[in-house]
Length: 124
Image (tube, rainbow, N blue to C red; front, side, top):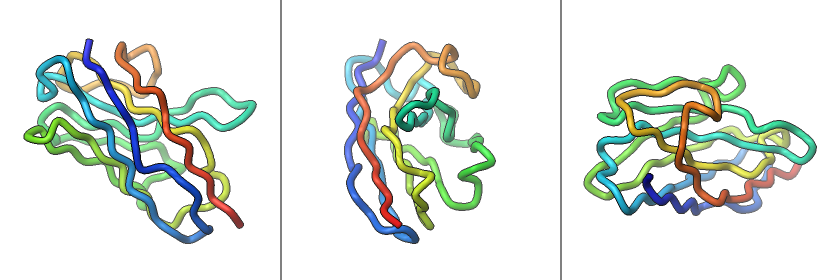
């Protein structure tokens, strides 16, 4: 497994932007598809976005499509989530996940490495 550490969360006003980062260590990061999930209080963890290990393929949840962008820099062992036009419904703990495959799915069980999460709070 690869070790993942998220950063970049915080408090932002509605309409604002944040960029989350996920730094990987322990294995060859470029061998791993990666994804972002989020979990709001009292709700199940939900898929946000995923990216193939080369960065050439991406997929997004409908709720974030057009507002969020997932990207990666394999030379820096880091995956990013650029979030724009944030709204209070985006408030959640955001988790980075990785799977030792080219491109993975939208379910939490598709991934076997997880970070500890970073809190994103959007005020109205």
